[in-house]
Image (cartoon, rainbow, N blue to C red; front, side, top):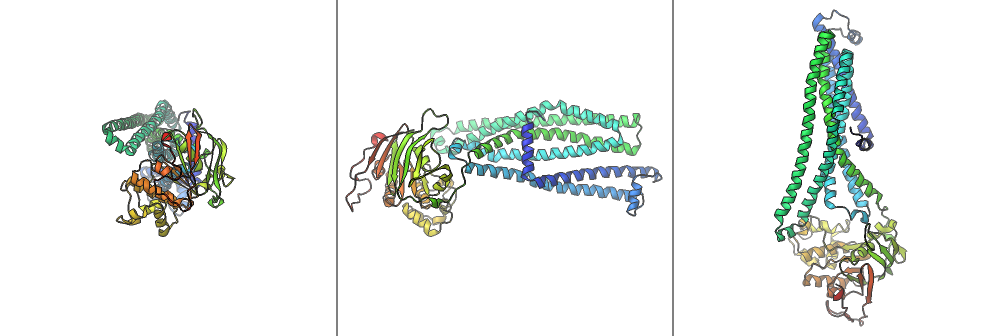
Amino acid sequence: MTARALPALRDFARALLASSPGGVTLSFALLLAAGLTEGASLLVFVPAVQLLQDGGSGNHYLAPLLGAVGLRYALGPVLVLCVTLISLRALLMYAKSRYAVRLHLGFADSLRLRLYRALGDARWDCTRTLLGADLEELLTSGIDRVQSGVWALILLAQALVLLTVYLTLSAFASPAITVLVGVAGGALLLGLHGQRRQAALLGKRLGEDRQASFRELSALVHGLKVAKSFGTEAAHAQRFASTVDATRAGYLRYAALTAKSALMFQTAAGMLLATAIYLGARQLTLDLATLLVLVFCVVRLAPYLGQIQAFAQELLFALPTWQRVRELEARLLAARESPPLGGERFALRQAVQVDGVSVRYPGGARLALDAVSLLLPAGSCTALVGASGAGKSTLADLLLGLIAPDSGGLRVDGQLLTPVLARAWRRRVGYVPQETFLLPESIRVNLLLGDPDAGDDALWSALADAAADEFVRALPHGLDTQVGERGARLSGGERQRLALARALLRRPLLLVLDEATSALDAGNQERIGQVLARLQGRVTVLLIAHHPSLVEQADQVVVLGAGRVIEQRQRAARPAGHEPEIGSSRGERLSIASHG
């Protein structure tokens, strides 16, 4: 092992032990028992050979042991005992292998689930800066490499245990040759330190290459329409091919490294075997039985030395990925939100108040929000407009409880929204983003993301509120119609209305539409406008939009610029009983084109 890798290795081993103390202990106990049983079978092999030579005329240590169980010291009982021990060893190794497989698969699955949950539990200000492709790489192929490292660690422990057993047996046969083999093997392992270090470097480089590959794949998958419209498919393919080539080259270098180690150990094994036979037969004049045991031990010792090198390299190859996983997990856990409290703590009857809020993102040159104050009366609709980068989405994230302000506060009916209450508040908020998120499942499954316990009546009611019930009823399978990847089987307007229905299914106190209508045509804009008119007085709405026909329906318009409120206007009161058509003037027509 390399000195730099020792802290990571200790952490890796401790994590494996902590994941299943009983499983690790049982696997090691079975492995140790299998090694001792194999050693015992070899010790029984010596008298078996001697019985073939002298017919049992000598007195052997095995004779009293057999006599104690009513068996005589003869070739037949000795061979039966030898076969029994070999079979017992095979049974123990079988049990060990089953437990070891469960152990390493369980560890990898537990790590993957832990990381996945930590991602979901972390604050948005932490996760928003992470690259999706990097997360996908770690959660899939990255943890697969960690899983290979766990298996390498288990096999490394197995090789060390069995090496110890065979060194002990070899010492019984010939201490001098055992010392020779041990020193030669140790010198060879020490001499291959550079290759183990190179394996660790290759593991780190491979992780970087795999990240690059996932990033390029993600870029094409999520931007395929743009790529095809620009005719850049070939350029994407070329960049992806370069990442694939780099990954393959890394694996080939690692394979060559492993093959080189195996070559050196096989050559050394032949030299050690020849030396052991010569010294045992010519210099130490060992009898045939002892010499056979010695030869067998040396033959088994050399491969275990090679396995120690190979499994150590594989473990070092996986450790950089393990460190990346642990660093990400630690980062996410440090940003973990407080456990959710009951959403019934909130009842929006008065207003949502943004009180002198300032927000600065890490590394930001200026404040994303600078002393922003505004009031969203219960049941009102507030339109938020401003140029790109004005702070609209940051304000939406604040109102959603996704981020906490650096100064100032957010109050719901006078109750300060603290980080402890943020998750409970989000349960009472509906959100419709510009880019609709839909699972490649049925309409029913996608709606139930808003409320998993909702029945069909509630689903149809939410669809009706979102002006989406007619098009869903017209689909071949209604609620059970598959929407396709990212909702590809639906039009843009249908996807947005489905997302709106999902948000309304939550029975939100606050509904945030974050430029959810910016990509819709005039017809769908009008439908969304009709929905907002029906929600008037029932739900508090924050509408981030630029289309005049929607903004004009708002009770107030807030204009942001460079993170500040630069204008705030209220809609003039309507005459009682007057309901203008969507898109017509509501008292004072609000001119916002200059702020779009």
